Image 1 (cartoon, rainbow, N blue to C red):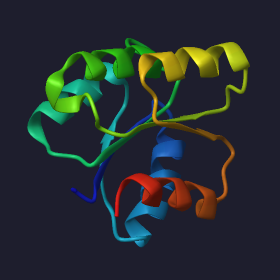
Image 2 (image 1 turned 90 degrees about the vertical axis):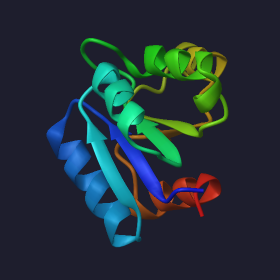
Image 3 (image 1 turned 180 degrees about the vertical axis):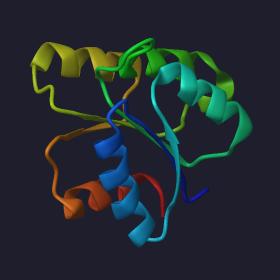
Length: 121
């Protein structure tokens, strides 16, 4: 499986911190600013996992997951939500859409990497 991860978040500082952590651990990172940007970049790149924020303009993380799960090529692609939202209803909505996991901001680097390693070796 590809060690390339697509990171989707509208906050530049979050993209920077997550990308830095992942790159130090040996992963390649492609960054996208929202779901639409993510779909465009997925069409051009092979990735082993997607980490996406929940709340973003244009297309949020749950809508992105729904789009991915509709496509055969991405049906089993691991998609982890990275968000500050801890409301059970939104978490349930993410799982129903097909989220593979959930990481809450702020996060510890170890927790992020442990989660990524569960899906991408």
